[in-house]
Length: 116
Image (cartoon, rainbow, N blue to C red; front, side, top):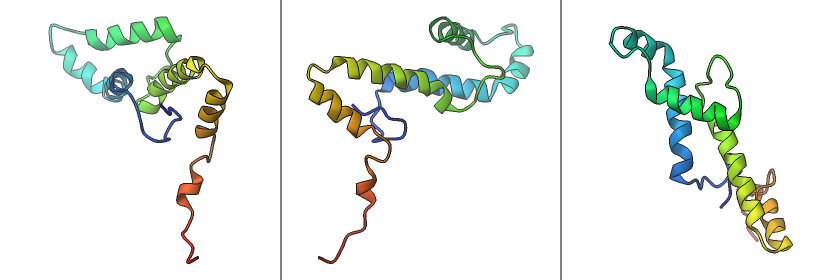
């Protein structure tokens, strides 16, 4: 399964859920704070829970929180890539995988057809 950012677009749904939520929540954080300030629930417990899990497993969070999903995806993609690379039994399998995710590896798909 290729996981190069922006490569073939093959992703597991489970790897999309948390980054999508975090990017969306971070993007609307000021609006959420305004809305929740008027309610008896002054914090977004779901967001707080996810951010706590993130900082526990992946380190400190930047301030302000990034609203782009690519930031939240980056570490999960790297973890998936490491998991895949470590699963290969043969060196040739790893070489094929690394060649497929190398920069510009799919450029041949953009080549113009010739009349010959």
